[in-house]
Length: 405
Image 1 (cartoon, rainbow, N blue to C red):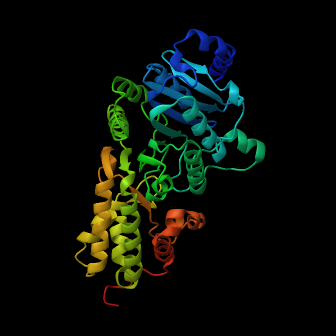
Image 2 (cartoon, helix red, strand yellow):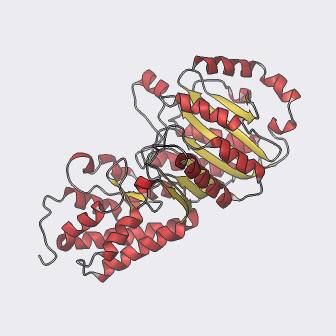
Image 3 (cartoon, rainbow, N blue to C red):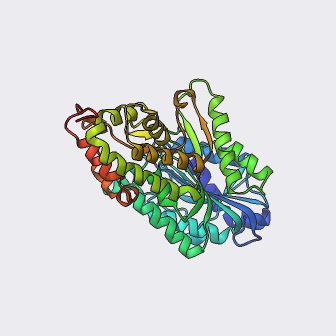
């Protein structure tokens, strides 16, 4: 931990000399690359060791004339620094922006500025943004322990703030990101993807928790540098396949998922879930118990109230005890939307009933399954019928109605 801190100080001290003696590709504003791959690496917490390890993985490959690897690294032990990753080392390149300095990685303005500065200083034909830290699905991402200790507030980037940061960066740069990757737990949800609409072409995320080691950055970097001409869909597939191959090779890792989603299908997911929520609401009295059984029968994850969306819809569609064509049609539209949007997926053996997208659906009114108060603030929940369904379903006092009552 402290050894890496001394290394950052040394890097900062030689940053200006490095700009003069290393290849021109590390200097801001030089010739346009094929890709700029940026990592918002919030390791200001108990994941610090993994964050340092991931930087070292990237350094096994490093940037070249076609690919820029740029990282905003904040650790618990040292101030944040903006790094340009080369083979074997990383250079401090944030002097113009005041780095190294302590920042609040839970502040969406810090994220926005990182995107804008990196896209401006390291122009490319294609851009990938990786968000790195703890994740809680629709509940947020990127907590900063140093800031919490200083302020007493346990803040994170909320869904609203995530969209604000991405939209503001897009407005300032005019750039739609090719890929947004969530190296965070439990983020493969329509509630999350909805916040990235119009700001990225493809999203890579996990329905399940992500192991501390996160994405295998060495393998991803090797594949990207070897074929820098790949597009955003290709890079998304690389991340999914490299992630799956890596964790499949490790004994004992049996609870993980990874998937890639084409944002062109976000509207399809939105309207399909909206229709399904409406039909479920209208069917509660007749089919409450059956809906709950079909929900419980779908794959669930570390948070039991996150369930596989397509799996739930498949259960509804196959339920012979549900005699409601409108509800069945809505379930089928959800299945089609998920199948259309999810184009790459890799699951562990404990998550083999996963289909790439989970949704928030607490199934009882007690314990972890009770509705969370702040779900009402989630834009996807507000803009569809899903919040109204979840609220009614999770707060229903009884589960004894049959289909004929």
